[in-house]
Amino acid sequence: MPVAFIIGTAGSGKSLFTAALSEWLKMSKQDVAVVNLDPGALKLPYSPDVDVRNYVDVGDIMEKYGLGPNGALIMAADLIADEIDNITKDIEAADADLVLVDTPGQMELFAFRASGPYIVNELTKEPKAIVYLFDAVFSINPLNYVSNMFLSAAVYNRFFQPQIHLLSKCDLLPEKEIETITDWASSPRALEDSIEQKLEGTKRLFSRNMMHAIYKLGIKFMLLPVSAKTNNGLTNINTALERILTGGEKYTF
Ligand SMILES: Nc1nc2c(ncn2[C@@H]2O[C@H](COP(=O)(O)OP(=O)(O)OP(=O)(O)O)[C@@H](O)[C@H]2O)c(=O)[nH]1
Ligand SMILES: [Mg+2]
Image (cartoon, rainbow, N blue to C red; front, side):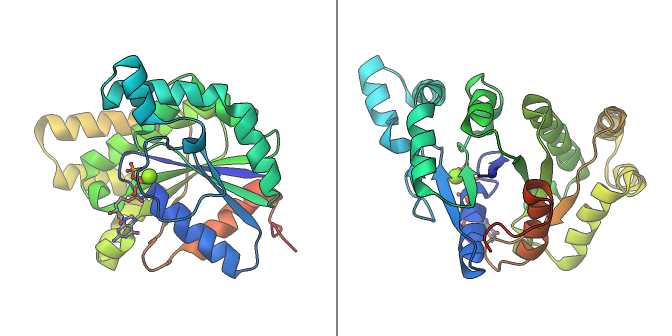
């Protein structure tokens, strides 16, 4: 079954987006399973069909190895890879037509350690997509936006899977601000203009050079606005995901 991995910096809205999209898909009579891959999650806004916390317990790791919370999370991220057979079995047992995977809070634990790409490769040989979240409130500053582009390019370079970008929490910004940010994604010129207008000195120089470096890589992603509170944007995101995962067909007929 096709799998979409939801990735983004800490607090960017991964878990709530996973909840909103899965609920929305269920209402559209699509058979979806949700996997929680975050061993450190205390409370989730959805009930996972498959939960890594059944196999890896951060509290136990802290106690057993005398680690602090961050050390334990790093160890937990690596231990998940050893549980891949169990997690795969659980996913197969869920027997859905689409799997949404909510990844660990701290993105670097998943994207920048060996275990993340290993898990993405091992979990399924069927089509996969990476859904990368840009927090809208954070992205309103062109310097932050460009930094996030850089992070998303680094994530692409770790997984080399089709990747779509979401502008999350759009209900928190006026429509006009959302348009400005989505324009940056579709037009390098618009981004460059904003960098010139809103930034100065070293910040301007740094953002401009970083932006050019990213464009030189030749990667281009669309940026789709979404709110997991109002469900605005879910239709477009689903269409983009269907295109990647099923060639534009529904998951469940
Ligand atoms: N207004 C608004 N708030 C949101 C939205 N999505 C997430 N949030 C809030 O942002 C905070 C973080 O959301 P989460 O879904 O937990 O984000 P996350 O990326 O899973 O966070 P971690 O796993 O802890 O790194 C929570 O307080 C959410 O209620 C949204 O679309 N709109
Ligand atoms: Mg989360």
